[in-house]
Length: 273
Image (cartoon, rainbow, N blue to C red; front, side):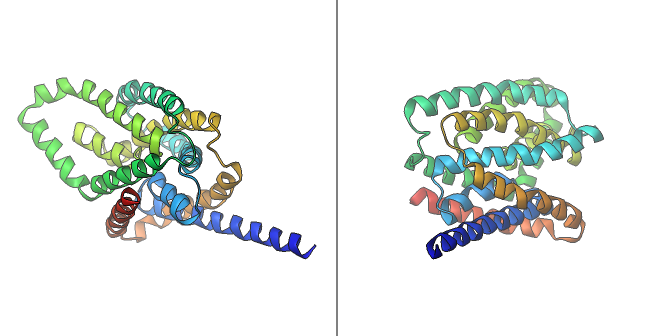
């Protein structure tokens, strides 16, 4: 009886830790806009000891559910560019479907895949790089748009589909990239068209069907921990609300830079593991 009570206490403690992790990630996302996937996936793998594929599958549903709330708000505010969104979907959704088929056939979708850990690490480094040099990429896009406007606009539709293809693959394999990488790609491709709010709204809404599709594939492969997902959401949803309300008072740029540096170091650790 004592053993059963100790076991129950351990489970409750673990659930509390998971919810606190969700709370912390939610607050950071609300404060800075840094993608939850790039924070939650390494926490699950490196701190909680969750198998890589299970971390990816669970994180995809974590992202999908939390971003539905943000997407709904942006839809009501009219801060979504539906034309850009359709172009992104033209690349990301087919890429996600094909990537899921490849994961299943190759066996990389198995929970102990070392290759998936390295893929997580590489994508973390890419996301960190994108976050650190976000303004620089925007400036490059603005310069090209100003000097070669006709050619640049002619290439926008095709390049947007290609951006979607890249994101569809990365998000399906690692659950990371829809936020940080997606935003930088859009800033480069549409330096004058997207306002800050429409950039965020379009980026968030693009991630919803993508993470649902990729998450469904991982769910069918048995890569979703429902109990862990529930505990993370219990913490993350109020965390995002609090972070969003406190964002006007926080040094978001400093926090974002610090997180990017940490993510780069974590990515290097995962690549070299």
